[in-house]
Image 1 (spheres, rainbow, N blue to C red):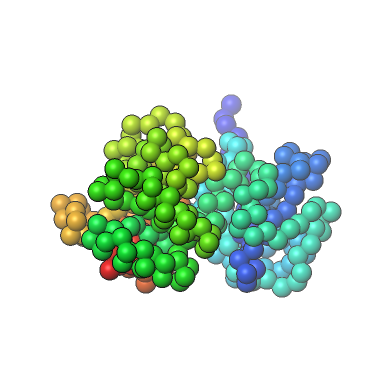
Image 2: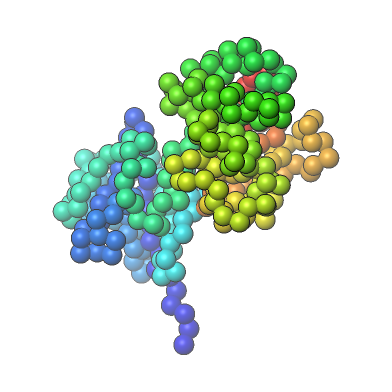
Length: 312
């Protein structure tokens, strides 16, 4: 007797002009009743995914979807009986409401993390809450005063995630990380330390693992209220980061770099092939500039990771 093919399900990501996300609460009579989810439903026989999404949004929310975009890099971990496909709904007509009696809510990105979500939808939350720029410190070259001035300017322009990666500062790592955390806090930005879990304490908002340190671990080293990023260079690294439960990965090098001239660059096509294979949000690193965000998004990146291009 053959295995039953998983049922295809389409999921819509709908955001308003302020960035709030539309979510719905599953009725008590359904599996996962009371949990929150992104709107959508099953694909009917003979239906395309886009047609099913449009129908489901009409039936569930009373809206007519406009432009819809498939998001193949939005990956989740559904039960074996279900195959999830995520779509971004860029515009729609009508006012969404719970047409089937379900609760419907517009949530800020911060609010999303406080709601009890369906387990299958949880891996999508970092995709929505992580910024498009991941800044990497350059204190050794610039000096603390100049670096902090430029960090402050970047925070004012909207930077929300910074990695402290400075081997020279190891002797006073926590003290300097705490200083940067305080600089970031008024902007709602988070500071991660490039190091191991034992070096963080309360001085930072999380850690960034080198690829070598990544392979030394067998389980997620910090609780879910802390962020964990990981440096990856190939598919095996990405798989390991996902198995550990990291929140995101940085994949490099996309372009040839002066710091690692011996490494063969992935190029955007190589990057895209790896980025679409994992449920983790992936930042592009290696010769990146702020204006590369659009091209990075087309290659299924969460955004770009920058060092000299921001602080230079």
